[in-house]
Length: 152
Image (cartoon, rainbow, N blue to C red; front, side, top):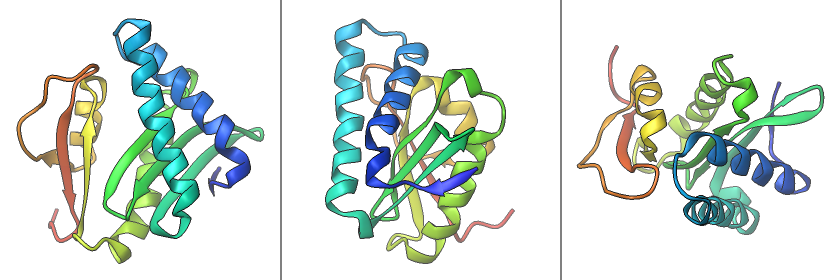
């Protein structure tokens, strides 16, 4: 079930992020630690500016198994699902819910993100399109954009 994230969820959100990164990003542990720290910084940003973001969690049996954070309604900075729950539609549901809110509030009428190599096909299936050249960063950094005024 999708719910708005609360500050009490912070540790569980960061735990899901860490588990997903350690499982899905094929990099040495110290590089993974840096990626996790960067994502945790985004969660802490949300705690400082909760009214400037969309942050949802997905719960199963009361446990957080997925999370999405869109900063300033246009910068998707964290979408992670516990790998044990991959391929069950959780990430798709979280994106759909977040995009509904962002469509109304995004000052850019779009949502931008940098996908890991692991997630490129997933975002393309959802209608995100490449938005610039990939950067050579740990885990991959593929810029994408989802425009709200696009027609199917």
